[in-house]
Length: 247
Image (cartoon, rainbow, N blue to C red; front, side, top):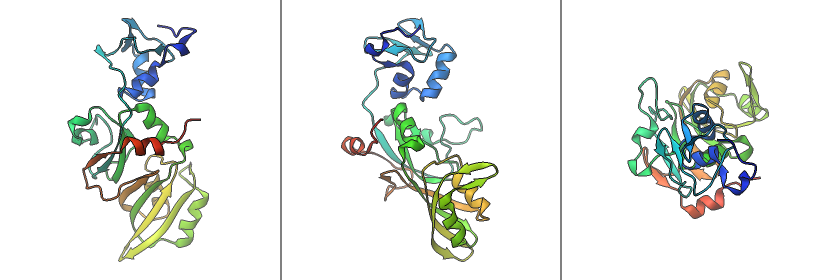
């Protein structure tokens, strides 16, 4: 099914539609299309730029896709020991297995690795998740980090200019020393890119192995006093007010 020339009048691109419906991220939706698993009005979809409207019937893997619900966002206090994926090939427990079934299918905004804990944002809108993950959004991710060793204040301050670790260039990082307790120290670390295991890799490069990592804020959303393992929806008004404007 090719995108018609007058596609903009028909609705939205099917990859975005599937993301907003919580089926998959845009990238994964494009993969589903390439694998021939998406049909529209009983015809195979062959192009991710195909446009769909309210009257179109979209089917993924033989299951009809309902119209996207209103966009919702939740704060979740992720415990350590859970992986942020829907299916883990190693059989480890996942975040999504522990969530209340009433949430339905949700997507995480970014990830926290197995050993990390703290604030994880969840949404039913894959397009929103992708939007909030982009560095261009400019949202600060803030962490409380326990490290083994005695941090050098000058080395922490130098992170504001970025750092290269094993050939990977990381952007500016704000790192401050909060407390020293025996052989360990607590830091507050803030960054905007949030690459995979960025905090751990950077601290290891400073000879400060991380023993605990807690995300306490993602942009304007705070972990606060949310109990470990608890999930709480962000009021729609707050979500609307805090969302970055699309350029």
